Length: 203
Ligand SMILES: Cc1cc2nc3c(=O)[nH]c(=O)nc-3n(C[C@H](O)[C@H](O)[C@H](O)COP(=O)(O)O)c2cc1C
Image 1 (cartoon, rainbow, N blue to C red):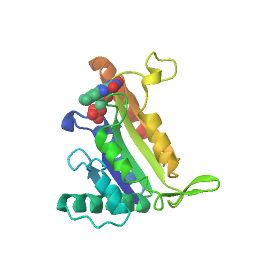
Image 2: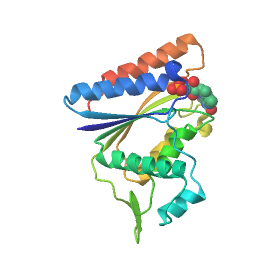
Image 3: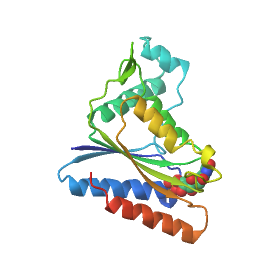
Image 4: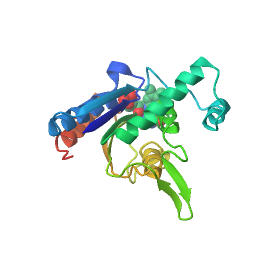
């Protein structure tokens, strides 16, 4: 089994989503001995923002800029890694009501017409092999569940479900720690709750 582990928190050792994504990966490794894990830290090696030069390169204009060349190669690798993965574990904090820009830049490397999906008469169709499972380690300072006053500001988990679902990654399990900014007790309780959900995961 191939596990792809991606983190995007900018908070390093203080990150909640990094703890949870590592716990999920450890659980998967325990359940699937001998599996291979690839780790990508998007906060330390962030993909570039997409530019016109990226689009031109995708359309066949050979890039001359070395940084762009390296970024395009890194983006191709990111997509290859998703194609090869059986399990994709994503550390996804909420920053300003959505995912970190680094994670968005990674997703910008995955949603490529003709590679991960194609448009057909019946609408978009995934080109990824079926059967992949995605685990999202979601962390956020406030509460955004059904009925919460901030419910409509939730564009983090919902965005990930939409964007990943668009390329056929529909088997998504969310492990959530929310209320992280609501005091030390709430933080500890949210973390403990998420960790007990990870312990109960049957992949
Ligand atoms: C730049 C930044 C923006 C944030 N924006 C939000 C937000 O919009 N809503 C929220 O509930 N919490 C917000 N938070 C709190 C984080 O979601 C919370 O600290 C969470 O634990 C972050 O995950 P991490 O610890 O893995 O980085 C923000 C934190 C940072 C650093």
